[in-house]
Amino acid sequence: SAMAAAMGLRLLSLSRRALRAPRPSSLPARRGCRGGSPADSRKDLLEIPLPPWQERPGEPLQAKRARLLYESRKRGMLENCLLLSLFAKENLNSMTERQLNLYDRLINEPSNDWDIYYWATEAKPTPEVFENDVMVMLREFTKNKNKEQRLRQPDLEYLFEPSQ
Image 1 (cartoon, rainbow, N blue to C red):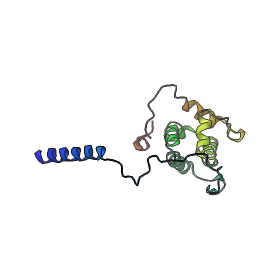
Image 2 (image 1 turned 60 degrees about the vertical axis):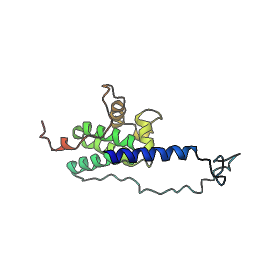
Image 3 (image 1 turned 180 degrees about the vertical axis):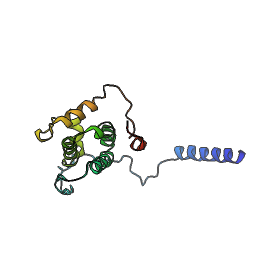
Image 4 (image 1 turned 135 degrees about the vertical axis):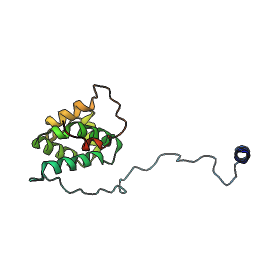
């Protein structure tokens, strides 16, 4: 409309004037730290202890798969949300109870999600305690040999499709 176009021109002329306006002398010419900064004492680092991982004997397999699917999707860092949710969609239903327990330990015992990501991408060596067939499956999945686009988590509709 004509009114919107007039307002747009007014905003444009205001922003041009602001660009030409001299900087107030009360503002510093440059911002930032000059010179060396003191060594980081890390006193501001807050470590929150996590409860130790515990295996859940007797957990029904259907409940375990559902819990692991949820935990694979809600990681706190996008890289693992994508990687683990897609891995879970492709593998959880075919895993044995032993493999489900290994996967549970892998995604829930390490306190730092970046560790899981680095192990899966082979940026860092996997600790012996997590070196098992599930880790091998995750590393192979991470290589994405079929060059799939993995830009978002899978929709959950597949959970409600009839099994073949």
